[in-house]
Image 1 (spheres, helix red, strand yellow):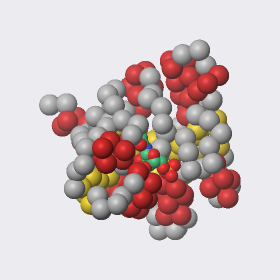
Image 2: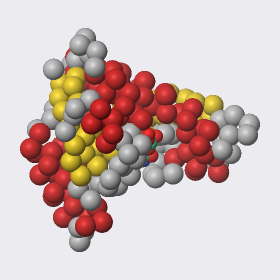
Image 3: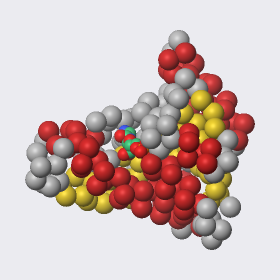
Image 4: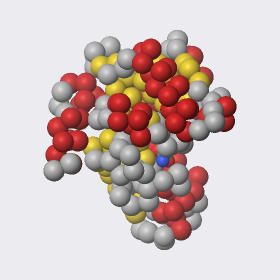
Length: 200
Ligand code: GAR
């Protein structure tokens, strides 16, 4: 059974989908802890499932590095097989990424490498593209620049605003995330091999 820590900042709808999937005894992974950089609404999903939570408030640390050290210490308590960034809206310091990579993945609401960063949906709308997408990647030390594990296109429809488009992307993200976690758990997807081949 693959153990997973999920890090969030917001509503945690992707976390919720992963928790729902993992509630199936046939699903080969379990969420063992949920962490956040702030008092995130998504904690409620973890609490509903009786899953422990921890918060490392970014605002209370003098630097990103000090925050990352404490976040890493919390993760070390749980020693998950995989860390999932599911809407964590903070860049992790390099030390923490290096400690966990390639066992740390991120979901993103765009078809990377298009529209990386904190405003993937807004940026796609501003660029007036006909389609955007959703991606799941291995986290590296760039901004949404790690090896792509899964991605799918989502059309931009006339009249879409940021909220409407994001709400249409999220179900695709959820499906991709659950599938990636399942494939990592079954050994179908070898993160170390993907990471190594990306560095060739
Ligand atoms: C998701 O769309 C996730 O991909 C995005 O935040 C949303 C969180 O939603 N993350 C990023 O944009 C990171 N660059 P949720 O809290 O409802 O799961």
